[in-house]
Image (cartoon, rainbow, N blue to C red; front, side):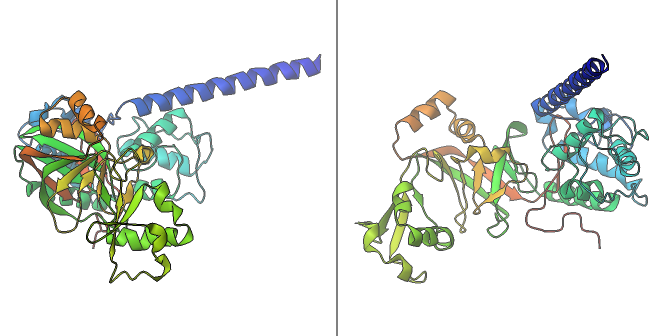
Length: 412
């Protein structure tokens, strides 16, 4: 009887554990399904008190229309800045766990501090002295991570710990940097703001925000340069001419190992007169990067490095915006992964808007598989910039990554 009773108790415990896991998974799915807007700002006021304009302090960011929101983002950032200035001389609780903290962990010293910090920053409505890493805390941690460009897994590793320990002075500097840079940007009929730290593109028509999408920018060794330019042409089913740097740093070492990698990647070799050259006839181990007599081109298609669309950006550094076949990379939070160009999450949507076409029309052009250029009736101004903080139209405050180690918010 005792054994049966013990088995019964263990079964009940197991079912309760499964139920808690199910609830946690549902909470995570719900968090990922919609944008998180902190219930309270850093001074404990409801997030609706964050204004989109300095002369309308009672207007919630979440109630702003697209036409109001535009660079009223500056007003929202300014309001957050004003509140933080009142705390500039204060310190957050020091959070220094000597191990990674996971949901369901217990830590008498550090988890209460974690609760305090998240409550102060607006991600937890009430801080308690509970030492348990429960579901409520896990949800708050994931929300904090999502708004700080960290993988929202609920685990407190180094990246999350660093951001939890950001000082008020650092956040104030980040806000100031963003505000000052935003003040220099002028919206034209059509404008895109490509922001490297938050890995996002925001497209405006006049004062109206028309779309937002994730982007992939250059990795640290091949950074995306900051610039002001414009897009005048969209190329459908582009052929990719392999850039010199990528050719010698990435491609040729692989070609030397196995020349068949060219065929597998649909890459052809041409001389400078555009005559095709057989790859087997080239001594790849002896090529000279200073006097390279060939051009490598990847055929258009679904596996082309540029995807199905290339947006021609006027500049001398061969930087442009384009589609990508590597769609899974947009699931990552830190997306400094390209060789300098900007990969777009929603290239067809952007093309349809710029060409004043329906999505079906864009898909039909792609379906022809013909390489074709379309000149825009209205060029789109493009600002590629480095804004440490951004406020989304729904009220979310996004604290950016620093992929190029420019010391965002560095305090002297």
